[in-house]
Image 1 (cartoon, rainbow, N blue to C red):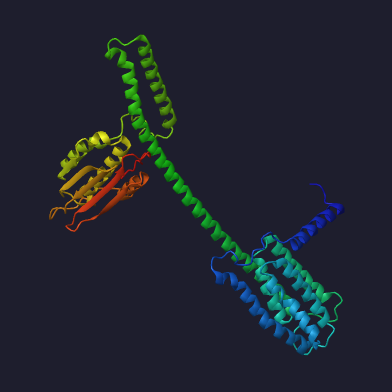
Image 2: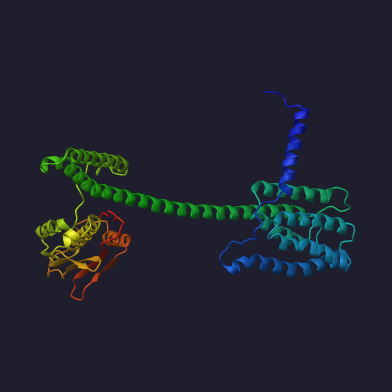
Length: 437
């Protein structure tokens, strides 16, 4: 290791002193008043009220000590005391500048009182001076950086040493060490309070970020479900177009060559579009659903669903208005199917054996879906404890209805049954979500 020369030592000390001076002279960028960001008005006014209360008590007592113990004339005692206490008010917004004024006043007061006869009291620091300085350091600790706090405390130690040892005709008493100890405690306490508040703020921000991330993840999952449904719906129709276009020349006799070529082009375009769509939406599919090619269920599959529920012990009846199946778009039909599916699943879980009625009817430009079940038979044991669900069935229904600007009405009936009624617009462009019960 290279030996440390005197030049290196001088450079190191110079750099250290320059850093020390910068921390004492360059304040932080935040000049917002203490507690100024609080949403409560009384908390924003609290630092000013505390500073004014401290000033109203320290100014009279400080003047009294300087006049009574050291015999200073009233104007000089008043000026020194005001200069020592007014920085408390400035410390709310500019604590480092307030510290400079207070520190300079400490040294000035000690220098003046050292040349007066002392009649009781303490020197160089009186009780009002110590209290004012300690409260100011507490305010400074809540605003400035750790390096600045360490620099301020070291400066305090240096000032007290200079005040009591360099050229003053009086030696200090125990208040010198008291000021050093209390100033360090005030800075340390303010430092701890500030770190705790910062930790709580960061924790709150992290919780907010986590909540936003959860919402974003949920949104992405729902978009993936929408993409899967969109794929299944569009893929079905595109496949039909491709098959019809490819088989048209064989099914229809006497088709001109130009028309046959046009049908072939349509079939090819449909197959290419289908392949492109599957490649685009394939990244949104989960591994479990990646191989599904069949269209999602709709109104036409409700009969099989009701029959399945009947085999589970729930006598259910389905009523569909004649001709309605052809009027319901596949996307709206999928939403209706999922709502009925979840409603019947709830009957199986919570009211096993209850008679149930499912009806679909056209209600102007909308589809009305109603699932009503009676009260469960007497002494029929509920399957709620044995059938595990996520508890999100009604939430999923509301989400589907909300996405198509529809309406949902659910609730118990006076006879002990339950009703689920949804109104789904038939011409809404949005594709509903796939919600798993």
